[in-house]
Length: 65
Image (tube, rainbow, N blue to C red):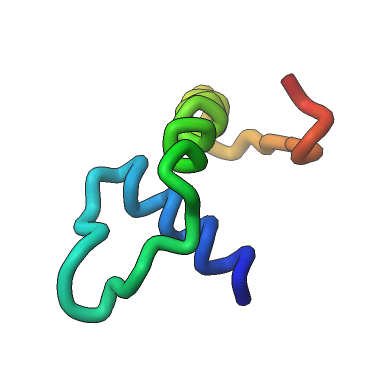
């Protein structure tokens, strides 16, 4: 559950979604962790966007660069 909350929080920060207010709660990440996640999320989004319709994307997390 903690990992899911951390991923969701990083995604909210990356997408510019609200991170404060009703139902959001305290951040499960330290202040520097969202900054470290935006680069990998940008890279993943760029790779996903480059996949042609009907194509596939294979990504081994932690090993692909």
